[in-house]
View 1: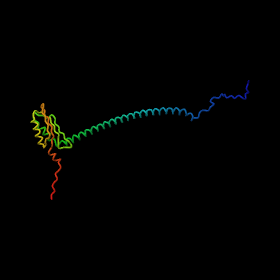
View 2: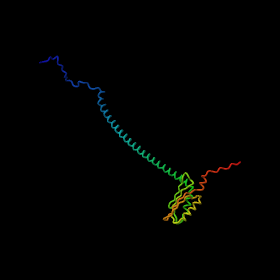
View 3: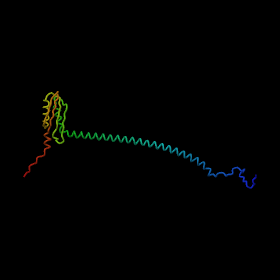
View 4: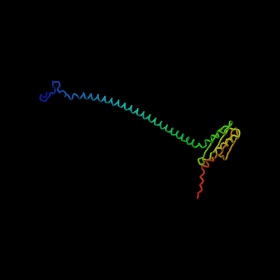
Length: 199
């Protein structure tokens, strides 16, 4: 069956390049695409490098912060140790200042020892409520009580009186305990007598 020629449209043409070429502006689109890809790669690598640098800086800052915290802790520990030493030194200074009145007594006791005698142990305790009284205990390496008499004589020359003495001698050691009362400190602690009123 044949179709009438009027109803057939022939779209085939023998001409080449039927579409007109792209305008110059549209030719830049692929170039811009490739350039944007290259810029994205460059910016991505720059971002990656900057990220690595930021991580390294953060780690170095953390290390510096850790070392500063360690140094701060060491400084605190040194300060605590120094304050402890200052407190000990202050206590020793206060002890030396409070022991000045009895230093001559201790020197006389030490000088009273003869060539065959020695001090094994010497203890002086003072009560804060009764500063005029000293609890005195001495352990001497001696065979006779003569050394004790010499030492007690030196103690009385320092204006101390002995109360409730206890002594024991055995195995070449003499143990003596007593309460020493200073006459000068006792008089200093007594209240002053009122002066009589003159008419």
